[in-house]
Length: 418
Image 1: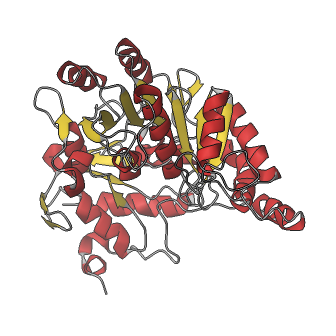
Image 2: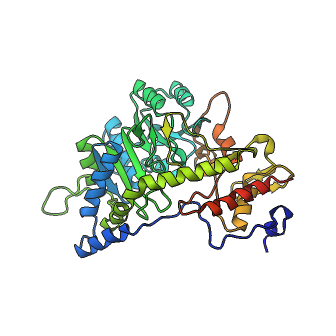
Image 3: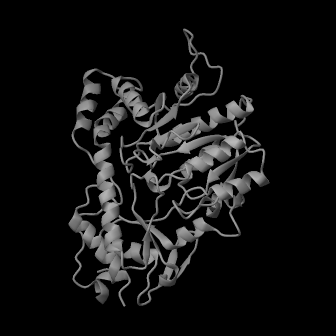
């Protein structure tokens, strides 16, 4: 029996009958229809009607002229980095990264898939701190970064947990410095800012269909742009850069990054349910907000003028309600205190009863991989580190029932019992 079941604060709470996931795939049946269609037509390859359909539909949904289906969001980000670098700096020598010797500004609070492609291309990442209004890249810190590094010409920004960042300000700053923006909208498909879909604000946009995303293909991603030649180049690179010749002719580096027509079939079956999933995620967020309104916690915020898909619902614990806690690179300890709690205690309690939560993304400048990279913040504050220290992601699965969520809320509440 786990320690939480013996803790009197949690008396009367029973474990979930089945594991309650953070965010798992939600299938509707139509996915199988389009997979079967691919089998019947023998399009078991990286071409076919499913791919053509989702490229057209997603480009239309986002408002971009072109969409290219790829094997993952990370693949889309990598090719976006290479394309942007060649636009800015020219074609690199074979065997050299397209960003070699170049600095790139990037969101600090994100999953490392957002920024790793800069390293793939030998670029030097400079991390920009987070703002408190949406937990995304801080435009004030970005302006400061350009004062320190005026020659930077590429910005990589992510919309954290589906919440759009301050893209109007960031776009204005980028344009003033002649910089391109790669917009990682992997988590924010279906979210809007000032009436525009995320994925539309950058020079290039990226979305993801990973298994935990709001629309899934089990894997897969999409590159978004408005220039036909850019889209053609991405298609070529993603199929090993084969030239138009009767034999296998290669004049530049290529990759095996094209999406399978079977994966595209799953995405095709999911697309009609995007708005339904967004509505369910929003209801989850609002139920948490109501359930926690008298606790010393705050929900992850969003900007006025934005409509987030609420991919993950998160909380931060008020500073005065944090119990004593310590974190190393790979573990955490805490001392339980009456009336107080911490992310580790809440996550341990949820896990003990069969529910999955997660820590907030650990900021990139705190990662051992990038510990020597520059980090730009404002007035000596480290907003991302503070959110990481006090925050956690709650179960946000669209299949979660109201009764299950009520139990999650009760478990969190009891972590603060005196």
